[in-house]
Image (cartoon, rainbow, N blue to C red; front, side, top):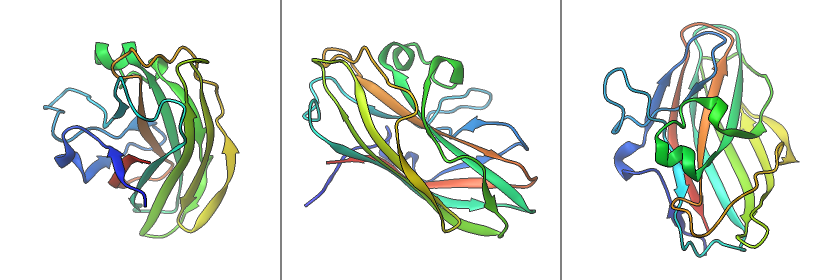
Amino acid sequence: MRSKLYGPVPAAALPAALAVAVNTELPVLNPILTPTGAQIPLLVNIPSGSILDGRPFDLLAGGIITTGAVSTVTAKLYAVPSAVVAAGTAATLGNDTVIASSGAVNQNTVAAPFQIRGKLIFDSTSGKLAGSVTFSINNTLVAEAALSNVVTGLSGANDPIIGFLLTFTLSGANGSITVNQFDVDF
């Protein structure tokens, strides 16, 4: 039996909606913690002392992509270092590490579901995050692939050990993303 272990804080942050700008990569923002003008991304953090140290876990995200025109969508999953989470600068994507990307997927319908499924593991001994991620967007399955960048320097003493965030880029106008699930299952 699997159970949800960690999710966004506060839990009421879902669903989270993102109005996208054409050809601009944007993080999904936390609707509870983002006051007008601020950009606080929707994060799933692994806290210090986690039982996940050295054990496989799933990172799951899902929701609906809506486009107003023929478009492509690119979804990305980022790892956010502990120091960046603590500094509150995760929305500056240059501070984070891309660990998976769907590449451009055709989104030629008005609305379609998406899911992102990461099979991940980290440990404090090696300090590394490893695993694989798959994307399904508009019923297009992007082949499962190993993490595109190795994340190092992880320590069980850091709080959080690591965070995760999602970004989306749409090539067409009048699009939106609704994230209904973003959590870690064990």
